Length: 478
Image (cartoon, rainbow, N blue to C red; front, top):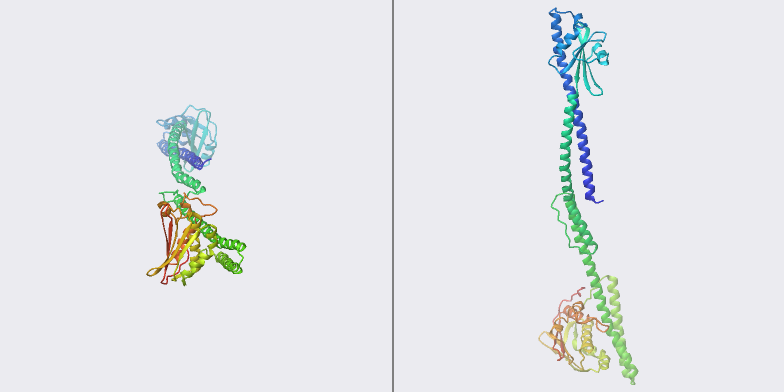
């Protein structure tokens, strides 16, 4: 059963119980007040009748004994009951009713008469088959002695008719009030359940990861507090989930970049190993071993750096700038890539001159490897030109190929994340990470990388390095 129906049933039961209690209380109160009023009226009549009886006795019309005798008592009872709506009876000291203004034959001794002869006023309600009577009995004192008593019998049927009409009126009013109360309860329960229903729908959206739904409640009560707490919880969950996605994406990008960079020294090691089998001169073999050892050391350093980053919980790459001859780094990088260039049948033209710049040698070599390998794998070139030139406060490395080139749209999105390059699928030879990582590394060294290309006319990559000291920064983690 829904909460709204439960509230409606609870309100209905509560209202019915209240109306039933009110009915009992009102019926009892009215009945009691009517009896008390009639009793008080009869008591007042008794006082008047007593005065009138004493006046008759004092006028010496009859004696007190004759007043309560069978000769005069019926006449006096009829006289006293004139113009009244109750029956008057007189009884003697023995409790025998000796005078009666009515036609009742009920003249037997009763308990109220015994109480009256004992000096007390008695009120009794009796019920018959078709009647209900209120009996009021009071002793008649004369010169300190109880010489008899007056007894009044009031028919309560009219009272019952009045009470019955009142009950009918009360039930009608109660049913009307019940109907209005139930309508109000239904509307009120709808008002209460509306934000709870909205909260239920919002929770269903939360279960599928949608935190956009907000609950608005204008009332100043616990429902408003519940809605506010839900909105805060939803915002907090959304922030935590976004943070988790951000951390997951950050870690994936970092390790993707690292594994991408691990390919370069491995490729060089494999290339020089293949060359050794084709060489006969011992000096050439030793040279190949030197580069194998050098690339193996660089690979080991990269792995150790990755392990240190994992232990420290810092996945950012740092650059350590130092003043270094860019020409030496460029020449050494080309020498390492020589087996790959030779295998791809690419000839190189190199023009370098000494140029000292502030850079991180390891990161710069990563950039050079990535740029040249991209030209080898993707451009389809047969010639590669590498030129190092010095300008005012910087040195430029121009790497130009005679490959197929790229159109304007592809060039514009070259440094975008791979997820944004829908037209270029990720393959086993290209993960879409190299150029984006190169741009980050160049910017961290205070330099820059730009690409100029035209479809069918080859591509030129320009690396810019600063000759003045720059402030080193950590690699952005995302």
